[in-house]
Image: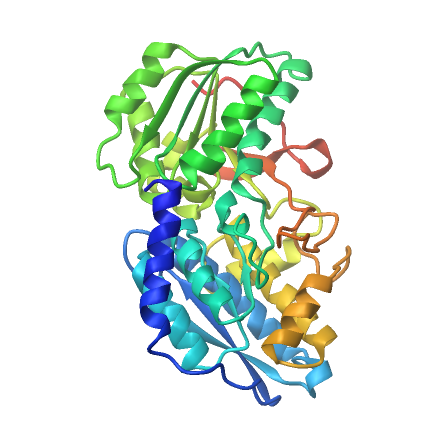
Length: 406
């Protein structure tokens, strides 16, 4: 969906329901703080939603078991989940239900950029703070909203990260790289944000783009697109996909015997455990742009707790959900209130420095005038013998990059 159409649809859907709801509720009682979580828990993006849900659940369990919100007399966080099904209209309806009926103090979510565009528009209308954990489309914070903040990078930064890694490969690893193929989902996240950022970074650094492909994330077969990549004979292939199509891309690369020295998957589908578990050995030597990994310094304790509770490895998106709960907790402590306006002011004044409330490998967390965390950054991971390891930058990397891909 084109960027302007996506925004226009969200606006129409919000306007159509505004007249049917009443005034904003008062702040929550301080024995508990109700927090809305909007996620795609069913439908084509459910893997992503269920993944971050685990991060939210673990974080709230930790906060509540260690005294809750102390400035509110130990108030417990109560999560109220809403399933947006990966649909914009449902995202708006569920956001309004959380605000009007459940009377939540804030909303967190919703992993998936298109539904976050819609849901945040509703939250902004009702002056309810929304803290984004993952959804990274640039347009989300380009609308001048005052009640929306984001912990994660914006999508165009995702696009720049693999290009910075290519520079490292050339200068430090002495691997020649000049010809690059790029492929991304044809939507506001893939095309207008990640794809745009990748293309601009490649051009700025003097790389030749030998193939550029925009494809529908709903595609059931991507061999036509991967054949184009194969024919272009690039030195590197950078691809942006959601969960289902990332697996299709990996399988097509193997079936078509595509020999490219470097293959880099940008977050989203590639950052989920399902990418490696579904592909098995086929995923080996894929590079992945991700913001966190269990092998980075200081991560083991939390990663072990997560694995023990859910029997699956923690990953970037789950830890971002965990971090987002800590952000909300700190804002509630600062506001000394669950009132939406006071909480929103506290969020925009927030400064989290390295310490127990910072679990992402950032210098810190704060929100600029657009609501973006300027400290957010990405790492480069790689699948090596079935295990995802960090390979760049050196300060976070216990492993060395393995090249070539095939």
